[in-house]
Image (cartoon, rainbow, N blue to C red):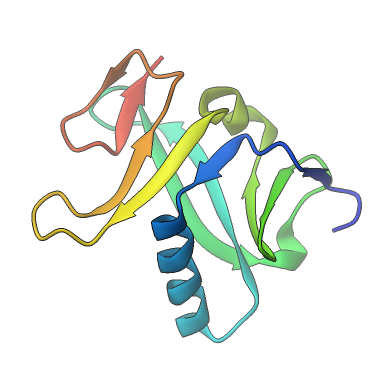
Length: 118
């Protein structure tokens, strides 16, 4: 992983609530995993967010890697073009809870909050 781009300036921002919940979910996996965040075509507004845990050995040399207190967020170069400046938050509210994406690059978003257009 030493060849991947390590950035102190984080293109993807995590709130403390999101970091705590992601860390909780990762700990339940019982492995040292990173979180891959990206975009794919689809969703109500044209593009949808994706995120999933993956083994740290799958980080590619051209990935952007952001470190949060020893926990790594990974994003491919194509996705970071759409996600740079993204803030990932988490709420455990009964209505509207879960992960929330605030993307400064989106010029339209879907009511579900999981897709966007640029």
